[in-house]
Image (cartoon, rainbow, N blue to C red; front, side, top):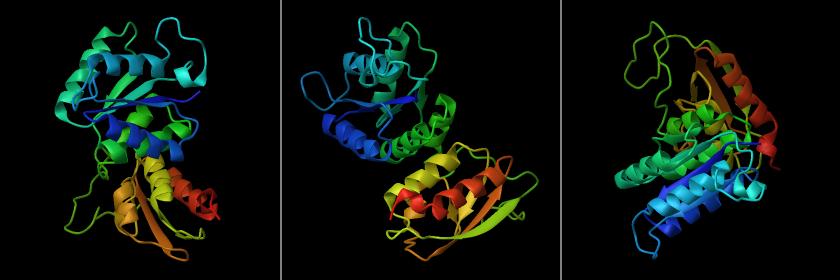
Length: 244
C-alpha cells in the first residue's frame, strides 16, 4: 500500500501529461488526473476533483477493491496548478465523508508531483509525501542549521554534520529520473542537503549540474537526519539509480 496522489489542473491535457510523467518514475503509486471542466473547457470542476480524490483514497461508494481504485491507500496528497484550483480542491475536501488523510500540497505542479510520486514509491507516509512535494520548491520548509547565519552564495556558514563524495556510475548521469529520486527522498528527511553546491531537494537544481558519468558528487548535510541523507544519496549513486 502506498500514498495516492491527485493532480488538479485547469487543463485536462496538463493534468494527464503530468500524471503520465510521474507514473514513469513511480509505477506502483496511484496517481489520478482531475483537469479541466466537465465539458472539456479550461477550468476546474468540483465534481471531477471530488471523484478523483474519492477514487484515489478508496472513499467512492460501491467501488470494487483494487489498485486502480486506490483501495487501501495510506492517505492521499492533492497537488494543484493555479489559485482557483486550490479553492476547488479545498471545497472537495469539505464534501468528503472522511477528509482525514487527504492533504493539500503547496508545491509546483510538475516538479512537486514527481518528487511526491518518488517519495510515495519509496514507502513514505502521507505527511512525508506532502513534504517531498513542497520541498521541490528548492528547500522550502527545510530547517536552517542551528546557530548559523547564511552567507551570500552559501547554504550555511556552519560546517556540515556529515559529508561524502560519490562518483556517478550510471551512463546517463544526473538526468530527470535520478534527480527526482534524490530530491524526492531528501525532501522527506529532516535535513538540509547540498550536492555540488545546489539544493539536494530541488530536482531542477540537480539537473542544472549537468553531471555526467564519472562526475563526483560532493554531498554536505546538516540537521537531525543528516547522516541518513548522505547515506541515501550514496546508496542511489552507488547502485547507479537502478540504471545501466
